[in-house]
Each structure stands twice: as structure tokens, then as C-alpha cells.
Image 1 (tube, rainbow, N blue to C red):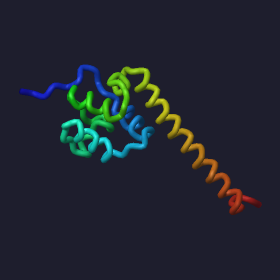
Image 2 (spheres, rainbow, N blue to C red; image 1 turned 90 degrees about the vertical axis):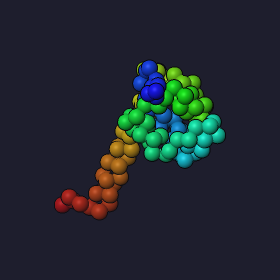
Image 3 (tube, rainbow, N blue to C red; image 1 turned 45 degrees about the vertical axis):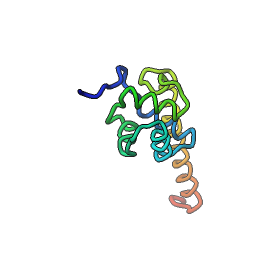
Length: 115
């Protein structure tokens, strides 16, 4: 019998962002899933977070439990999920700006381009 997949696609980015915001590692989540009776390999969880795989309904329920969020927060169309994606994008943009500013400061300190 084929495995059941969730009807609505899961947002892997939201899973990763929520996991990271709660301070959990992939190993922590895998351990939590094991405590819920699911034997999931870390690579499988990473593939879900990257959007390469979709979890079964049972795994989705367990992920939500381990992450202490409703299942809908992990769905692709959820406002919580979209908020997590926006947060990740904002974090990446701020990081890029900080790197740029560090480079500008370094160029200034080294006097590169000064006449």
C-alpha cells in the first residue's frame, strides 16, 4: 500500500525557521520524533525542510507536536508559514546589508581607493 502524503504541501522553510527559532537542532527534532514513536533519519527531515520531500500525515502531526505549533503553521498556505518565510528572507537581507557595511568599513579603514 503506498504511503499517504499530506493534501496541502508542507512548507519546508517554515519547518526549518520554526525549528531554528525554538533553538532545536535537526538531531533534537529527530529525537523528539523518536519519542513520538517515529524513526525518522536526519537526512529525511533535511529533505523535508529543503522541500524535496513531503511528510506523511502522521509525520506532519508529530513534527507539529515536537515544534509546539499547530499543523497549519507548517502548511505552504498558512499565514504562520508565510510569516516564517518572510522572517527568513528578512534575516537573509539584513545579513547581506551587514556584510556590505563591514566591507565598506574595512575599505575605509584600509584606505583603499583613497588618493
